[in-house]
Length: 225
Image 1 (tube, rainbow, N blue to C red):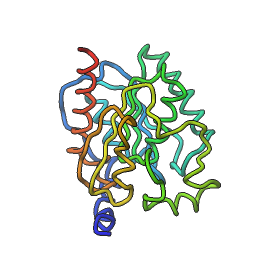
Image 2 (cartoon, rainbow, N blue to C red):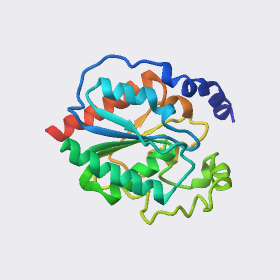
Image 3 (tube, rainbow, N blue to C red):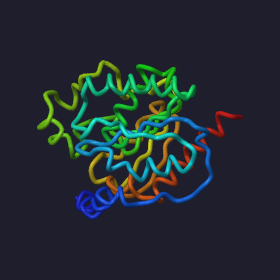
């Protein structure tokens, strides 16, 4: 309960995202496109600082461009899949997918459907594993959708690791999503990154974003060996 109460203090970070500037740092994006998918009941405004930081590091990032994320939507997934292919063709390089919370589930499904177009998947406090009822937002999710959390309208198994490098970012102090659902079991993600901050901080804090990008750079270095 204490962790959930802390989430209220973190909400201003989401609201102030459009007014914040990224920190400078080494560029390692090498022109790769990146699609950043927001969490449940949020939109692209919530990922502004993350996208600006990605751009400053040499990526070509964009939001999901589909308004507020209200849950698993086959039509929105098809639109993302089409955009993924377009970006792959335009840049000639596989695309990085970063999903915050519910957005990470979209990212994993996309990587299952079109792995040839995906460079890596980064899930940020995303409940892709375990008991979905362990997460505090499940009642809200079911209230605004025509399906239950256990029966999303995707045939893909989100627990199964996509056939691309995956990073699961999680927090032991997350007040919205159960930590075990975010880091998964052995074999469900290639890498994990623990950042102990509230759910609404992990995707909006400049310090957290720097840690996420550092992990992405580390994965790039491993692949180059």
